Image 1: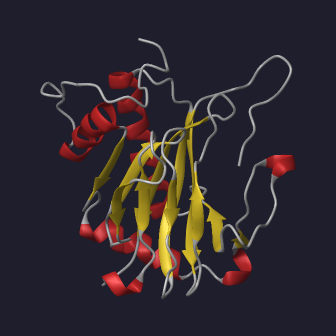
Image 2: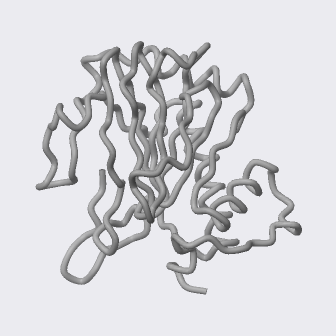
Length: 228
């Protein structure tokens, strides 16, 4: 099985013999059967709360206005997205623990789905009141090293009228919604980066999350794989 075996098309995957954490097993099964997964309570209550506290103490001066594109194509586009970000390095215990869990998930994705994932990058994201991110894909087919996108939500007591929903669209019909999900505390979304258009609806209060990507290594003899 090659690294592109996990296609955008649904297929059947048997995880009955998978003996790891139940959440990992559900992610693997969902990805293989439909290409995306949304799970609640992915981490323990205590660990999720620690990540929330980590996000809340990041000062605006230490965050970047998020843009679109990468490297030389990167630009600020407030008509497309209005969130602030801070890339995550394992410089505190809880940040390191988060990256360690995602590394374990990367290992299982490679072991079970043969994806050839090379690493994982992630950042804290803050959407202030009135912020959004228009419909987009995280990777264009054959032009990116991002394979799987993840979003973990860090918001207490989020209600429907607070907005800020993640909307995932059908890959074959980008106008058809597959699901609309509130950014509730402890909820994890993961989906194939090339396949699914998605958006963040207008948020009516401050919204926190951790966005991340599992990547393959596109380094060649002529160019280095781009980082963040």
